[in-house]
Amino acid sequence: MPQLSLHSPIGPLTLTEEEGKIISLDWGWGRDQTETSMLCAARDWLNTWFDEPKAAGPFPFPLEPMFGTDYQKRVWNALCAIPVGTVTTYQALAKEVGGSARSVGQAVGRNPIPILIPCHRVVSQNGLGGYSGDGGVDDKRWLLNLEGASIPSRD
Image 1 (cartoon, rainbow, N blue to C red):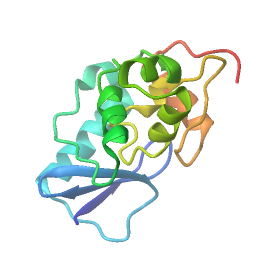
Image 2 (image 1 turned 180 degrees about the vertical axis):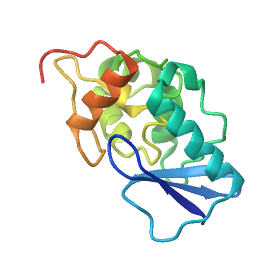
Image 3 (image 1 turned 90 degrees about the vertical axis):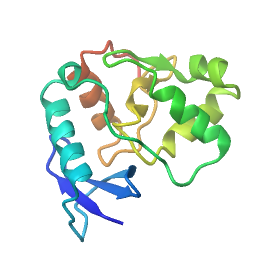
């Protein structure tokens, strides 16, 4: 599977592609680097997004999380509909896709393509909740600030 890494304001990130689809975004620098046209364009899109999220527009490439239950994929699809600079709660997302706030939180935490499937836009009713990125909640707070989102005051 081709991988391409990039430097970002929240640390190194690695994109992975398979069969013309982005299948993961991981924190850290990948061992092997392959510059496919899709990975280069996705890297360029991310660089633009980190400069100005609203100017980047929607991510223009197919996303295909390889592993996940039907429920997790339903949650991940719902995440993609949350606009830049907007937050929703785990509870509100549970009302939309079914399940509980806890089951939504577990699905969000297993998102294999963070940022591109914007799990950072889901918060708890009483604060930020968690985040699976390398910097944890600090990364989530940074991403929400970048997007100009209103951040809950209690953690």
